[in-house]
Picture 1: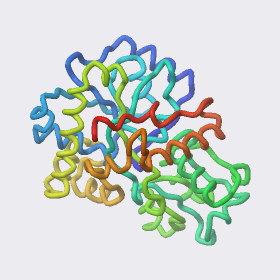
Picture 2: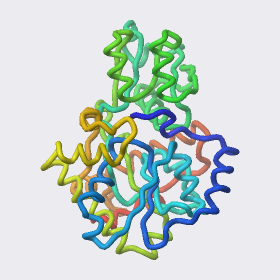
Picture 3: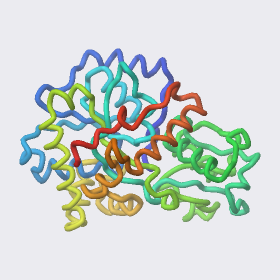
Length: 328
């Protein structure tokens, strides 16, 4: 995925300072305020807003671009935001008795947008043993990398991790400073263009693992359920519009998301590495408390991986983190 410092896990002291600052700025009354980083998968937010879908459903919205999803979560915990757009695995690290929120909708899955670049002589994950791998610790990149190792039966201790942002990891790899890096587009394409290595594997090989969700504070879900239903209905209508009018949709979303995606062509290129989730896909992925869908497996993996890495102390259950009722 894209953007410098995207989805970094911040140090506790820094996050604490953000929480303190955010506490002085309450969320907008009468609006659903969502924080997000700059990512192609969040384009439907702006598409639904521009096309008037939120207004059609009687919902006012406020979107705030935040440099890091950890900052957005901190702001939400402090009451500045009603929800955050980020990955399913990431939100497991923040859920607690004191910070209640649930994932209620899906945006997209990474389908080639994330990947691992390596020297050309590295042919498999088994070849990573004893190698240094540059990646962003505590981020979705580390979750995905750890998942790949676990799937291939490789102990984490067999690989040396060098902590840096995904963009810095790609730069270090291109400069010949590390043999392997976990990063995202456009860095994957850049490595191919410069012919300095290869993409060893990407998220297209792990469908349904890197999933972007919309999570909303439990107090909002309880006090304003109709607003939440309207919000999600607008998002799903926007995804349907993308399927019917991709070029127009990309132009609108590029303008809304902005940043490195402000050019419609760049947005379209980035969109080729994701799958936007419509209502049917969302219903299937979430499942129900009685019969959970694939989301339950990612939650299980996240619990195992983040526990092993010391990021969570107690497992988070499906019902603690998912509320599929708004999409059923």
